[in-house]
Image (cartoon, rainbow, N blue to C red; front, side, top):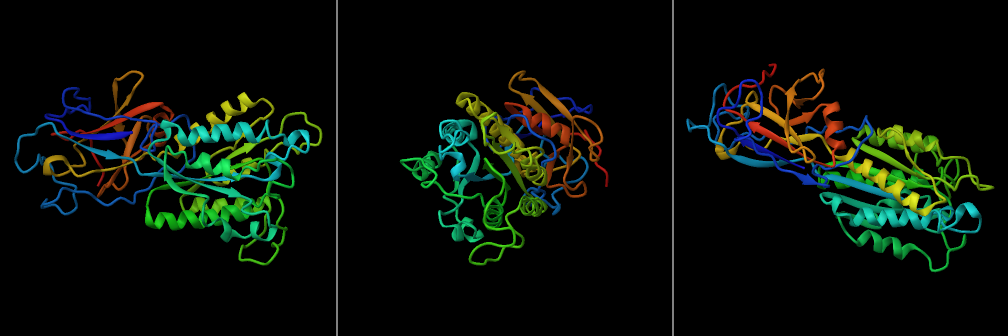
Length: 411
């Protein structure tokens, strides 16, 4: 989604949209803003953009002064574009034997691995994923248990951060799948804690080079298993062990560093003898990662599994979108005035713009606020507004620079 900034001539005092002078752009299915419904509680606020007042302005803060209309020029309609922060999704994909060994009924490859792989490949080549960047890391990282339980093996993903859509992910998945699927040809254990630790370090290194919004997407069919409870073979540096509690601690620490964790749990076919208990404890990981509950996929019917995975990934795609809009330079060298701003929301379904109200406290519904009211650098949609925008299939946001004060910003 793109936010188009217009300098509307003679902006209305009542905050209504001037259809002749307001312009907005749209994005379809991109990390710039299109999404499907989302769980609440995801951290969508960044506030790390630089203040962008107009160059050459006598006001170094970029906030402008009362009544400024741009170097004495007549207030004319102009526009410039502003987008949301880049979104990066780091996928951790479970390739342990329980996904596909086919040695027992509940590990049948055609019921678990095949439909999940089909849906995963579709996401990575889906035009609706345009605008996102993603990486893919397989875990366990090796057949050898000593290597698989080392966090360092997960510092380099199998597919690096790549703009979507891309066929590289499907190629990597095809490459890792053995020609003959048996328990001996697939990797054993589920070293989730070590994979998460290595991936968090990867994400932190990436973020230093490419700032943006980062999230880990964990796709697994089991609880953390193997690698020992008090350490792992060959020694190592990880604090804790490969227990569920250790994974929760890892993702909590990542969340504190503004890295969310989503979980897609691939359950065993219902009613199969010998199948493990339901993976409901994976909800603890998702909750610790700030993303609500894990998306649980029932297996047994491949078509239904593909559909369920698609629904889960669309929710993740929507929830990952930031509701922060960096304020661009005012058009045509004008000076940005924080009280001469209208924000509108337009759904492709109705094509009718709705004006959102300004509320720095986000106490009312349908509102937005500034990141820093004294010296704003970004517009932030309040939680309920953010949820509505993220739940829309195709949406555009318009941010109109008016000629008169239309909002009152507290000092």
